[in-house]
Length: 353
Image (cartoon, rainbow, N blue to C red; front, side, top):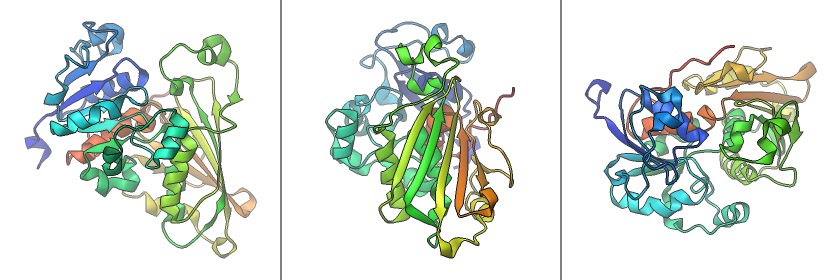
């Protein structure tokens, strides 16, 4: 089906008052093949969306409604920009109505239910839907996403780590998979739009700190996907940090090159691996990745370094945690699910300065 004849996709958003919700609205309001049909919030029922988010004035005319009153069953796809556990309580009913689901929380990311319940502190109430769901990393699972009814949109940190490492698992063994280090930093919007002491201006501004040192819920998600890519168990040390900026994510990965792979041209490997991927930019040799180069865009940039030509490869990755790390990736998934070019509605250039 050509874009010119494409029927508008009726879209609903559950949980539209957070940062990922407003990013979905910003992107979908500009999408040429989308009709925004419903957006829900119990607390803000009846409030015009543009009253809460003035940047959407003139672009979004909807008002918030409760999930019970919203015409979600009339949609073609519903995005869940909600806390963990909400999507799995409503997905079965939507699927029965022929509605596809893209969840930006963790309900359909981890196939290992025991790990999900351990890290998220709740029971998984629809394991049969989880089994059929697809992990929504388009650059890895594009073909499966095209035929999916339910997508688990990847976490922000996992997106940088997985896309940063994926080319290393595309052929012969190149690295020691038992010793991978991922050092990641995120802006404070990654914590969501809620009142917390740690993200208050006086707490997070002019400060830099690591967190989740005893374990982070994105660790099992990364390990599950890396194990599938590598075809064997992997050893990962993952350390997230909070950076005093609003949006942006910078992840540096350190891997040991195997002796038999020491002469590998990693730059060419990465360029060839991602040459057909519109949203992954492998930067020229010697480049320095910067978070500002991806702000408000769906682009993820990768820069490779090999200090002194040694035995360790450094992979640096930057993305906007709210776009490629969340809402932009969700729209990219929708495009693939409905047979559109995956760049549709996502060609915004990053904002500088």
